[in-house]
Image (cartoon, rainbow, N blue to C red; front, side, top):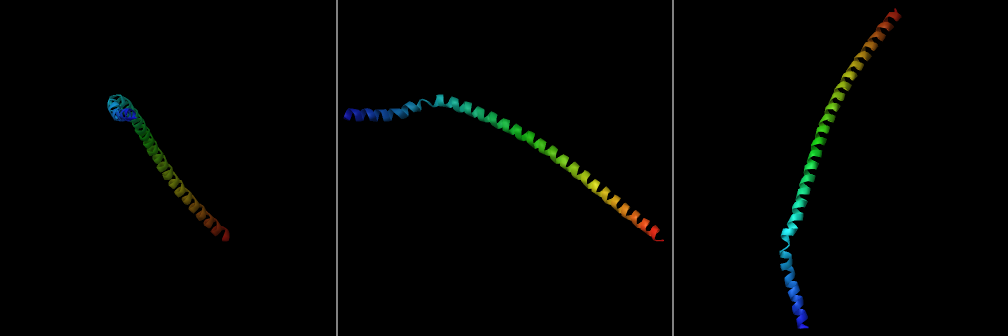
Length: 96
């Protein structure tokens, strides 16, 4: 039994030593993973940049539409004032 215990202890002690020699092999996948993560990050940054440009374009369109809407509203209000004035003039002429 003591031989089994001794063998088990040797296996337990040897396992950290065996894994200690593996980091160079483990470093290669980590480097590949890091490169993939960097590539993904760059792709996401490019996508964010494109979306920012699109948002700026959309904001410019909204500003243009708001300006056009305000101008159309002012023109409509002016036309309504002219119509009201012409109606008053017509009523004044018809009343005499």
